[in-house]
Length: 408
Image (cartoon, rainbow, N blue to C red; front, side, top):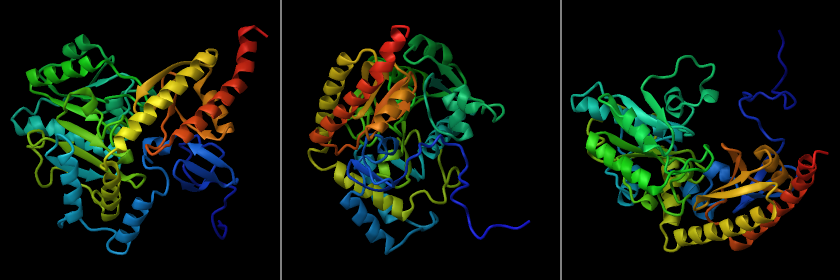
């Protein structure tokens, strides 16, 4: 058998697990991307809530360039001064006492799941391993986080899911109470479901979960992989709820585009974690830590979250007016901060495609919702531009939709 001299572009070699759009980009700046076709696109995906500071933010570039000349990787067998600084800053800004660094949201969630179980093991209750989760959730792609997610479409083909998860309807407190028993270790929930359709129960539900966890001596775990790092208008979404978890996972925007995840915990929740109980080769990598520290530098400046909240209000108001004008295409605006969902009447995929035709990039979610996830640095002018492009997309979709409604 003979091989060609090199890989062929005509025959893709990337594992076909993504339904990729026929579109590629060569550079980005702020809220804008330039495609290999030379066209400019307004990026309201932010890498699915990752590029919170936009593309090629100068402070992030400088931090990575400086670190790249010093040290790329160092084993966790040795101390990490910059990692200690990042952990201290995250703890100072949150409820946590300890931080574990990893490389992704799924890894951060794996740490949270293991810590939740190990907490009870360390207290002499190894039988407490089950975790209550919620319908519509998404917690990652590992076998453990898929089991926590519980959706059949993600689990199909991988054998029996990992045992230990009891899924209940979102917002159903009585169902949660029935699910909590002598083998329950904790409750896992997203402050605002992203993949599940930008949906969340009332704040009172989260307060009730906190009370139930305290009464039952179980842990409350928040998955803030998508909602954390400013996406809902505060550094962490739990602050908007007035409810403090015991464990919290972060990733996505934490590195501003550089892969890094983190699992934050109180000293009590982390009591059972000792040398050898968990680990990571690349977790806390010097480049990733430099990126995350740079992200915090920007986000913790006075006025940063005020701007994000102001842009959120402006965008939601303008989106609501488009919904009013095009009820045959759109039905609802939902979400918090700059994690905003447009519930569509037409198939959400059609809306995403129509917006892409208008050079506006968005991303779908459950419940026929399209997510608007602009970088947190988005300007009023860019908000206005996005709404104009949405308007044109709705007009393009209205004709076929009206014809279908008329039975033509």
